Amino acid sequence: MDHGEQVLLKTEPVAEEGEDAVAMLSAPENLSEEEQDELRRELAKVEEEIQTLSQVLAAKEKHLAEIKRKLGISSLQEFKQNIAKGWQDVTATSAYKKTSETLSQAGQKASAAFSSVGSVITRKLEDVRNSPTFKSFEEKVENLKSKVGGTKPSGGDFGEVLSSTANATSSTTSEPPSEPTEESP
Image 1 (cartoon, rainbow, N blue to C red):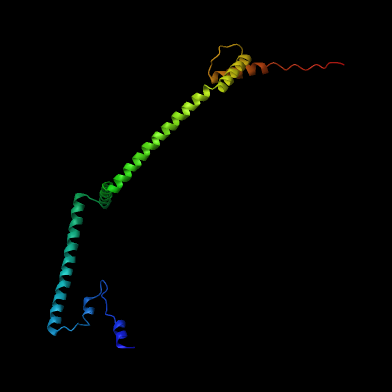
Image 2 (cartoon, rainbow, N blue to C red):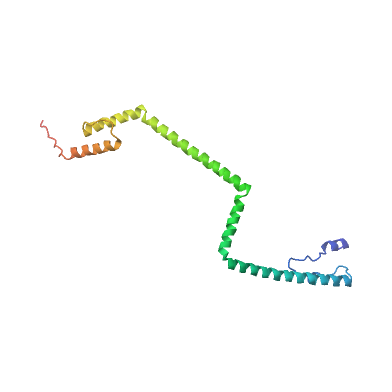
């Protein structure tokens, strides 16, 4: 292995998040003893500040919890407020507004289409009712009605036709059928 390959294979340690900073100092980079002492003092100072800030944050969180308790704000209420705020934020976005507008237009178009279909069906039923075939069928039903139910004024509704047909049928079936007579040859 030549010297170029050794340089390529040599790696410097990389600090991982949360790794002790002192461990990184174990391989000082050509620092004088004085510079190392200065860095160690600075390190200790930063660590102390971090610890102080953590304590201050914990005290502030405790104070916040106490204020919420006194105001009667529960976790559930806070959760509801967060959800409401989040929903408000979502509805304020342009994407939501565009989607809402598009869905509204689609709903209006669908409503208009259903209305149009209803109108077309109504017209078609009127066309069928006015067609010669339906008129002929209607006349045949009226004729049947007058034959079965007796002479009644024409033009009753379908329910009346059924009722009169049922009455006529029941009155004709109440008589016993006559027995056929056999003719002698």
